[in-house]
Length: 209
Ligand SMILES: [Zn+2]
Image 1 (cartoon, rainbow, N blue to C red):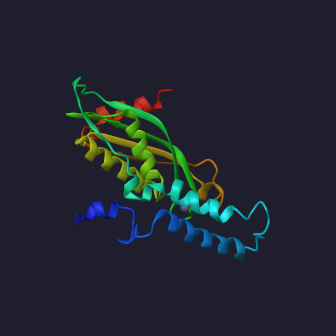
Image 2: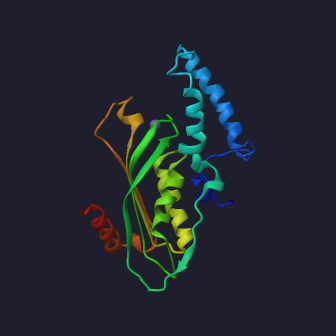
Image 3: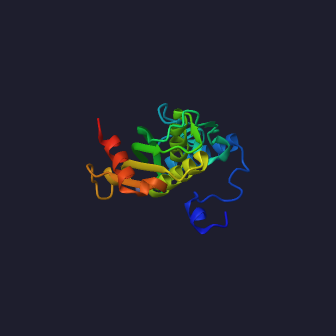
C-alpha cells in the first residue's frame, strides 16, 4: 500500500467504506434517489415510478457496484501447471459492463486477456470473473485495465500477462460530444508481452474471427 504506483491504481475508497451493511446502504441510497427523482419533478406516487428508488439502490449495491466490496472478490485457486503448457493462453471477447465514475452511466465493451503460464494456471472462468469483479464498480477504463492486469500477475505469479479492453462510453455517445462511433481502446502488457513477437501473436489471436 505504500507503493506509489499501486496506490494510484486503487479505486479511491474511504477506510470506513464497508462499515455499513449492504442493506443499510440500500436504504440510504433509496432515500437519496427518491430525492433526486422528486427534485426532477417526477410524481413518485405514479405506479411506474414508485418502485424505482428501491430498484436503483438494490442494483447499485448488489449488481453494478458489487465489485467495490473486497468480500466479493473471486476466490482464485491456482493449479499446478501439470502439462507444462508454456504457450500463450488467450481468452477473448469477455463481455464487459462497467460504469463511468465521472457520469455514472454505462461503459460497455469487450476485454481480451492472455497469459503465458509459469508454474501455475487458473480455471478459464476465473479470467472472466476477474474482469467482472473490477468492472462492477465506478471506473475509468485505464485504471480498470491495470487493475485486471495486476490481479492476473499476482494470481498467476507471472508478469507475462496482457489485457486489452475495447469499450463504448455512454457518456461520450449519448451526451457531450455525442460521438456514437468512437470507442476507446486500452492495453497493458507485462513480461514477455513487452516483446513484439508475443504482443503480435496476442493481437493476431484477438483479431481472428
Ligand atoms: Zn463519463
